[in-house]
Structures are given as structure tokens and as C-alpha cells.
Amino acid sequence: MSALPSAASAWSGVVVPGGVTVEPLDGGLGVIPGLRAAAGAVGVRDSAHRDPAAPDVGILDVGRPVPAAIVTTTNQVKAAPCLIGVEHVASGPIRAVIVNSGNANACTGAQGLADARAMTSAVADALGVEDAAVVPMSTGVIGVPLPVERIVDGVPGIVAELTDGPDAAAALARAMMTTDTRPKQSAFRLTSGASGVRVAGVAKGAGMIEPAMATMLSVLVTDALLDAEEARELLVDVVERTFNRISVDSCGSTNDTVLLLATGTAGVVASEMVAAGLEIVAADLAHRIVEDGEGVTRIANLRVTGAPDVATARGLGRAVAASALFRTALHGSDPNWGRVLAAMGASEVAFDPSRVTVAFGPVVVCRDGGATPYDHDAAVTVLREPEVAIAIDLGLGDATASTLVADLSAGYVQVNAEYTT
Image (cartoon, rainbow, N blue to C red):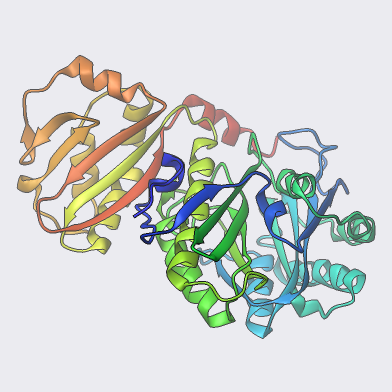
């Protein structure tokens, strides 16, 4: 197994096949041959948490329709662009993506569906393709009508600016931002002998991050040759181990979308290598989302081991991640391990409390479900680090699952108390 370049891409436990070299690349989606992107400010919103003159609509053009796969929110309240995106991917290959920030186009009824279709139609007309070859994405305030005419009017100008390279990819990443403080891009090359594959991605997300298809938008692109079914199987598996295992506030969104596009210019590549590349990029982007979470001052890599199966490990990790008491203790560097067990016990996931061991970094604070002598100051020191390793051993089996968890600070409350004001 090859070593990964950073902990940010290794936290999910991704396994790199033997003999495969992993290399980080600069430029985000700009490293994939044939991709073009552009962004513009069309006035989707009248106010924002950042400069309202910043770009709020971005377009990605693959150059030709290619196989695609999509995963969207598990929320029962699904935004119009999620519904249209699923419909378009199911109908065939995808040529382009249009994304707007500042307005979620969620809870907008029949008009919202019409507006999402209008976005895709405007791009399709400008590129000379069918409407169904374009996927829409939206992010921002829920329940506000989308000023779709501004987007439609702005599309021709943005399409005229489409270009390749890192600068264009960066413009797209900025256009996707809402309360994000920085754009999120990732790209890696994996090689084995004469075979190689590039995988790159862009994402946005900072709040409403819940590990059940996290609150975010992301486009992943690989130059591997895949058909739609292969892409779907790879994407579902990767999302489960990455974007589904992050939490900033345990609040599920209406707009979550991850789209995978496969351009095929690298030809057929071993599926294990493609899967590893996708997971490395997705894990890196997921880490960036939690790290940039609203009001976040530190994050925890919560690793549940010794479980009878992955579902148990994931379920108990999710229970701890959802605990406001645990996350405030994390914020205050308080080694209050009782909050870990209490959160697990309040879940519906079965385990044996008398077999649980908890450690903050190298400091074991709980053994066999009860108190054990430990160095309190050493535990506090561990919890003051920007990223904290917390291990929970259930003592019941060999399965493991990791969850990235953000602390809960006054900064988070301030951002969300004033989100629309």
C-alpha cells in the first residue's frame, strides 16, 4: 500500500493498491484535459456573507457529453435542482454543469422546478446540446424564489468566457461559495507502470453539514474511461466513506449533490486505482469542508473501532458527532469522556458499554466503560490541537469507521442567527 500525501486525504481509511504512486496536483478541475469553466456575478442575491459583487454563477463544460453519476440529499425536502439533476443524469450523458450560490431554489414548488429547467436550458442553448445534458446545482437561502431571469440573462456572457486551466477552475470554486471562507479544490494523479489516472474535484460547504449525504455541492471528474453504471457504483461507495461521514452541525440540507463525470481521455484504468483516486479526492474535499465549517476552531477525527460491522461503527460515530454536549466539550478542550458514552447510549445502535475504551490521542480516559486514572493536563493538551484524534474501541469485532466532527462555538451561533439578516 502506498502512503498518502496528507492526513486530509487519509482520514477515511482509503486503501491505495500496491505499486500505485499517488501525487497531489495543483489546479483543481483545471488538471483534467478538455474541461472549461467560467463564472460571473449576475445578482442572484441582494446581500451575502461575502462581497455581493463576487461571482454567484459558475459553469463547467466537459466539451462533450460523458457518462455521469449523481448522489443527492436524503432529506425528504429536496430542492428543485436535485430533482432535475437526478432526472437528467438518468436520461444519459452529461455535457455541462451550472451552479448558483445565494439562493437554494428549495421549497419553491412548481416554479422552482421550472426555474431549474430554465437554467439548464439556457446553458444547453449556448452550448448547442440537449437540455438534459446539463445538471443544475443551487445553494443558499431556502424558501426564496430564484431570480432565474438574472441567471438566464447572464449565461451567454459566462459561456463566452469559458476557458481551461487552473484560473478558470478557481473562478468556478469561488462562485459556489456561500458562508465558506475559502474555495475548496483537490486533484491527484495515480500511476502504476504505464497506466495513470487523474481525479479532481471542487466542493462547497460550511454549514448544515450532517453525515447523511452532507450539506454540500461537489463535482468530481476523472479522465478514466467508465460507463454510467461503473460511475454510479464507484460514486455511491466513495460518498458513503467520505461525504457521508462528516459533521459540522448535524443539520441535513435540501440541496446536497455530488456529481461524477468521466471524460475517458485516459482510457481504461484498473477500477481499484480509479476508486482509490476518487476516495482520496473526496476525502480531501470532505476534510476541507469540516475544517472550514461555520465558527469551527478545531475538528476531531472520531474513529470507532472494534465494531461487529461497519454500520455499527458508523452509527455510533454519528451519534457522538450529533451531540451538542460533546462538540462544546471539544470546543473547550474539556476531556469530558462521559459525553461520548452518553451520546452512544442515547442512540438506537446496540453495543456493550462495559467493553468500551475511549482515548483522546494517546491518553486513555475510559476503560471497560468506566473511569480509569489518566493525566488530565495531557488530555487537555491533546484537545487543544487544531485536529484531534479520538478513538472509541467497542471491543466487539474488527470493523471500523471514521467521522470528521467540528466543534460547536459561539461563532457558529452568530453566523446562523443572522443568516438572512
